[in-house]
Length: 299
Image (cartoon, one colour):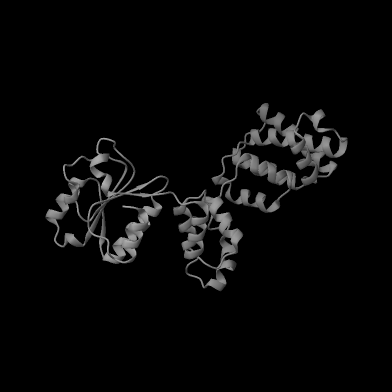
């Protein structure tokens, strides 16, 4: 069966109770949406089981089993039976099918492709209308395209009127969404170089979600602060600094740090680097990173 045919049968409530295998490639989120819709339309109880043998056992023991929809979730479906048609009201959710049984079950398979970016963002707008477009984009990227995380976050806004959602979103964006917020070492270094106080504040709040080594951060900052100083105030060329023209142009155009700030920052970072290497500083890594940020912002 093709996916479009499955959609039409669900919408028109003409889907039979025959055995079904829904194969996904990336996430089972969409598969679970179809399963929930089938349960809603047919007024079925969803029962999660481990094997097809469990389905037979439960059907034989439970009164009213015809109102149950049995779901088996596997990475690879491999149960071998002579006749799969006996497993009515049963759906397999899996990523792969064992090659030894593929020919037996191929007529029961519906392939559910991974959603692309525009489909996910359209879905976000449907379940939670009323936000600015850039907020949908931000959540999509911050949640690393994970539909479960995205849905969980947007569900928090469904209690509010559409006219209030944007205001509420702005208020809870970096509070309730902290569990999905993450910053890499390079991103943090970029935020320091541009003195992006909003992003630096985000790090200070959600540092427990960020895996950043203080030593690595210091090395990156010393390297880039030196480059910026030589580009801005020594007027060194890209060739002299052994960097690309593109990198030279970006740093020259986009980074605006005073010579005083760069001198103070380099002195501070160099001394801190030496103290760490000599074992004169024994702070937890996250505290040390926070100290670096706050100290640099004070210059």
